[in-house]
Length: 329
Image 1: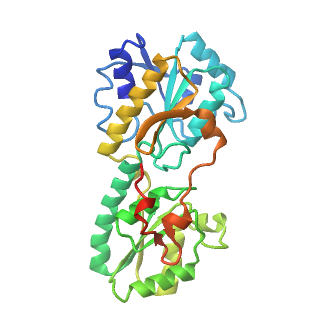
Image 2 (image 1 turned 180 degrees about the vertical axis):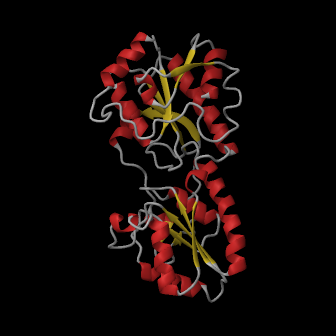
Image 3 (image 1 turned 90 degrees about the vertical axis):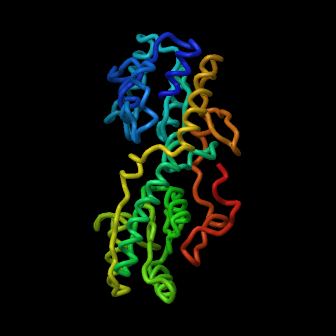
């Protein structure tokens, strides 16, 4: 939003920039502030979001009420010429539906899950990976000293990108992801095999990972997959097992240089698209190139999951060693 503001004012695309608080709900509730060069000056230096987030708010289903007509009416009353939004797949799919109602809207992909279709990178991903690496380095010190099995649970309810990249770069002994239903016995055997040369082990598990034939309800009843594994592995290995959830540390991470650069690039491109009177688009990165695609593509296309054949090794429960399968942002 810093660079949306600067580009808009510097290029005189508009005379005023409005920042709506808490995402789409801010437009429905008319909760906003005027953005200036001065008040956005530090916005790319901190983690999180200065305008807040609407989380899972749905304009079309706000506690059973469709608020889309109110949304469109408020934008019209305020004479908003273009709406630029940042967010994940849920926000971008809502953006498409709103564009179908005549809202001139441009989307910028921003999620630590990475898997938005049509773009090879989403803002925030490497910042979250960096945060996980810092947590892993600290866990490794204690795990090595006490010769423990340490489990680090990451975000990733449906997608394993964050877990697999964090585990790969952080040299985890085992990585468990939502895209592959693992067997507890295989995890135990892998730990036994590794114990012949490793005094300790680090397991990275995405929150959405599930053991084969184990229900989500069964896992959630004990506090999530990390706690579930901690209990099971203690029983089955008779070793000390510790669990840590990196959770919201990932979302509050300091911005990675790559994220700062591409936030700048995407913001400037989004503003330039509005200047050209183009909308209903998402700016994106494809094969290292900045471009844009229709929001309809995101709406019609499933999220990009980990490719088990090229990116994962089920036998070792690890990321593959295929150098062409990773980092092609």
